[in-house]
Image (cartoon, rainbow, N blue to C red):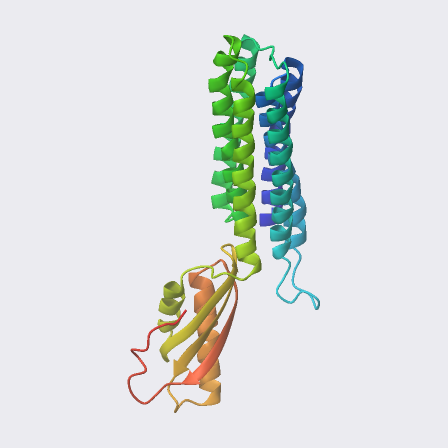
Length: 296
C-alpha cells in the first residue's frame, strides 16, 4: 500500500468517527435547545470537513510533477487548508451570533443526565481520534495528519468546557449555556486563524527545516570546502533546498559536477523529507574560505 493510500485510510476512519460525533452533538443540541452543545457540534463537523479536504488534497498532491507543475502538486494541501480556515471563521460568526441572540430571548435548555452521557461518549471518541491520527501522522511523516490531529484536539478542550457548563444549566443557570457557546465560537476562531497563518507561511515560501543540518550534510561530502546561501521552502514533509557549495578552483568541471551530485544525494539521504536539491558550485578562495559562515 502506498503512503498516499495509507493516509487516505486513516482519513476515512477519522472522517466516520468525526461525523458520528458531530451528528450526535447537533441532533441532541437542537432537541435540548442547547446553544453550547449545538455550537460544539458544528465545531466538530469541521473536523469531518477537514478530513474530506484531506482526502481530496492527498489525491491531488500525490500526482507527480509535470510540464505545468515542475515542482509537483503538494501545495494543493495548503489551498484546501486555507479553505477550511475560512469556513471556520464563518462558523465562528454563526455560533457567536446564535449565542448572543440567546441572551435576549427566553432561553431555557432542556438538559438531563443523557446530556452528560452523550458529551462524555463524544469526548472519548475525540481522544481516540486525536491520539490515533497523530500517531499515524508521525509514522507516515504526514504533516497534514499531524495538523489535523491538533485541530481535532481542540474539540477535546471545547467539549470539556461544555461538560463543565451542563450541571450549572441543569440547576437553574441557563445563561451559562450561551456563555459557553461564545467560548466555543472563540475556540473555532482561534483554530481558524492559526490554520490561515500557518498556510500563509507555506505560500510565501517561509524557511522550512534547519540550515545548519543541511550545511553539515553538505560539508560531509569529500571535496566540499564550505557552503553558504542555504535556502529552504515547501513543507516539513516535502522540502526544496538550494545552496552554494565552494570547491577547490583547481578541480575540473567533471569533478566539480560529481561533487554537486554527491551533495544532492547526501542531503536527500540524510534528510528524507527533501524532495529536490539545487547545488550551485563556486570556486573557493585561496584562504579563509573554510571558515565562512552559512547565511541561510
